[in-house]
Length: 292
Image (cartoon, rainbow, N blue to C red; front, side, top):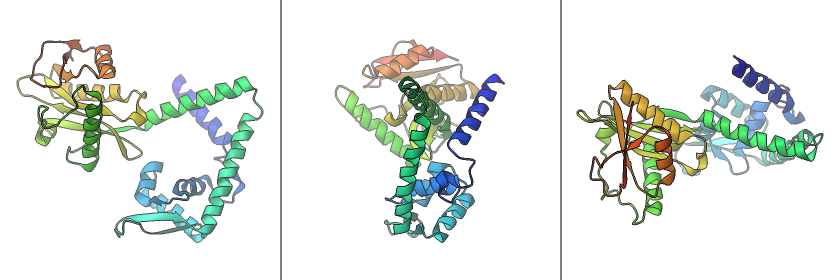
């Protein structure tokens, strides 16, 4: 309860200090929701679907916000540059770009008003604390969901995974040389593909093969560099272990390359023990097992 109260008290203080409770955010005659949406659209414009995912807004609420900005002559919504009628894009009018610039300046003024009363040491402490809070909040916003391995977001993760291995392995990485992992092996009941997303964008993945007469096998654990350091790799690993245990497995295995030192450190710190090779993966130098 003490932790919950700390979070709630922090939320109350922040919403008051940044003016989220005011009817007119930054004295611009519109509430925070409209101002934030205008800012996110920005001079470059943005797809409506991307805005919805980025801000975590209900489709109906987002539509109402867009209509309000359109009514004020600040935004136009239409077919995007791709020409696909199914893809709607929001862009700023000349008046919208002028308003965006004013918001940008007013946001600077608000930041100055927060930092102004503080000493240099206090400003440094606040900036450090804010950066840490932001990272932890981002970590709490990452969602883990089971996803078909053929989903475009899953494919994007696997391509990024392969690109990184190609850069880090001594002799590169070729999916045609590595032991195959078929989509069917990562689809229930034979397995699962776990996708990590942040504001709708894929930022990590992991897979689990549920063998009939052998320990479950963890594969394709990858985390985007944009979110590393948030504990996401550990979280993906824990989720896969839980799913293996729920499926009745008493242990899980995995293999890895000697150049993936961070992954090896993670496995060892979470209870994995090195064991003799249990497969003929050509890129593997270490094989690990953990009893669940």
